[in-house]
Length: 99
Image 1 (tube, rainbow, N blue to C red):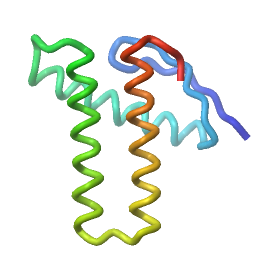
Image 2: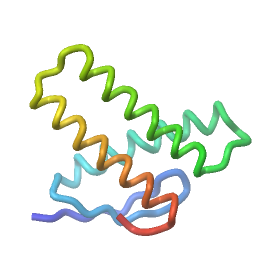
Image 3: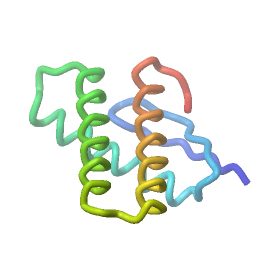
């Protein structure tokens, strides 16, 4: 069953729809928000787009590092899917659409 939440991430409000629980989607949104804010503090003159791309790269790097450390194929696949969802959320935000 699809869940739907409204969440503000990095100053933009999104309606997030997905098969995951509302709690999980909120947790992902909070995680992304925290990462974006951290990058924004370290790069105060960077555009939101640049910060979003750097955030996506950092998350993808973490995924690759976990894979290299020998995560089971199942865990690696699950993490890859979660990372894709996060990146999709970031991409949608960069063009102003609702995810």
